[in-house]
Length: 296
Ligand code: C5P
Image (cartoon, rainbow, N blue to C red; front, side, top):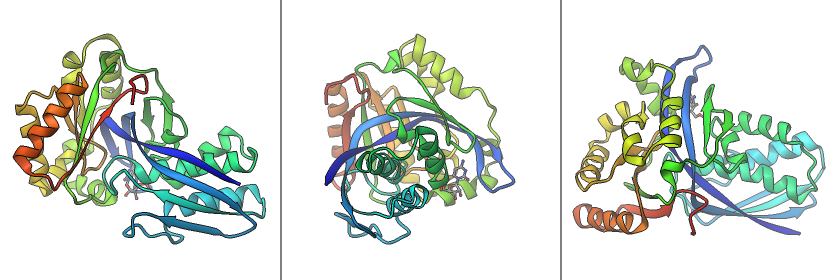
């Protein structure tokens, strides 16, 4: 039996780091928003073993792959004595701050649970997801959410009125940023490392009660401090997109993707064209409706 699932990505509307923890992770508050740009996962039940293939040859398909680890965790927990072949069709760029790998892991747990008649309850799926990575639990659900702890504690929210009808322009420079490197660098940026809590709720309250333009000052990402210092091109992208009138421009997660929020499809497509005239055709770009309520 074969089953196919979409595995959508995310952007962080806010990522406020609150300090380093004894276990090496960082406490944070984040506002995560689903983006309707998805990889595709195909699952075929096998009698035994986990077999993984991917259209991207630069993504390892061995036991280090997060999808492989998610499948291994599923079979270890359920003790079904079965196996699976999984094909990953990648559309979301790698190491991009868009949560592609985390989403693939979450949707592997959901896909296998469907394929084998729901052996795991929702609570158990959330536990397995948190053990796989800080961003993985968010992708078990499909709404905007606040993440706390190391990002794994998810509070689902409603769709934000200020973002209704909005489109996001995503720009990826062609190189990735390693998440662990970005976090390690924070020790050199004490202000970014030790943010004050409360910013996530402030942004959510603005997005719930006012316009995109009125919310713009509340968008924030602590990891921009180290990443924009190391990769000045990303700062140039941001400056240009702002100069062209985008009300919100921010790096997503630990980068390297920059996103701009626009009030409608026409202005997002126009901004993409202007970006290409300025920076050339070699950078990956996408224009995507932000809310699930928008037609794809
Ligand atoms: O949780 P995940 O495995 O996705 O995290 C990748 C790396 O990012 C961690 O090894 C850690 O270096 C860093 N990280 C962190 N604090 C967080 C989330 C991630 O330091 N809250």
